[in-house]
Amino acid sequence: MMNRFERNFGFKGEAKLRYLDGEVQVVTPGEFVRCAVTGTTIPLDELRYWSVALQEPYVDAAASLKRVRETSEKS
Image (cartoon, rainbow, N blue to C red; front, side, top):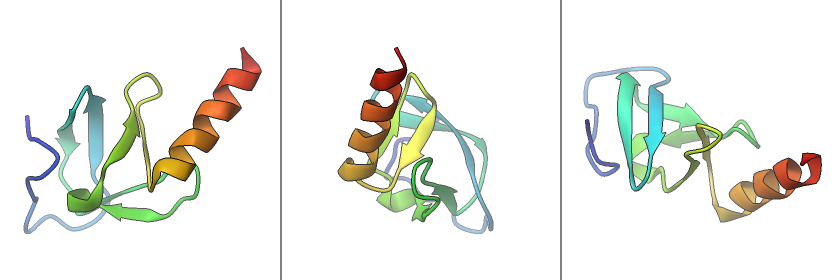
């Protein structure tokens, strides 16, 4: 398990992560993940926003809020 501030030097491409409360677990090493809302690449050391329930990352607070609004409308 790693915390969100550790880096995966030497691993290229998109990482696969498990999003936990306050940290992430690397499933497949890589340099970045993609925002689930915008598709923007997010370097792992800049990842600050994600959903544990939906298991997806967000580039910023605005993208996170957009997803919350989208998913709450469907319920």
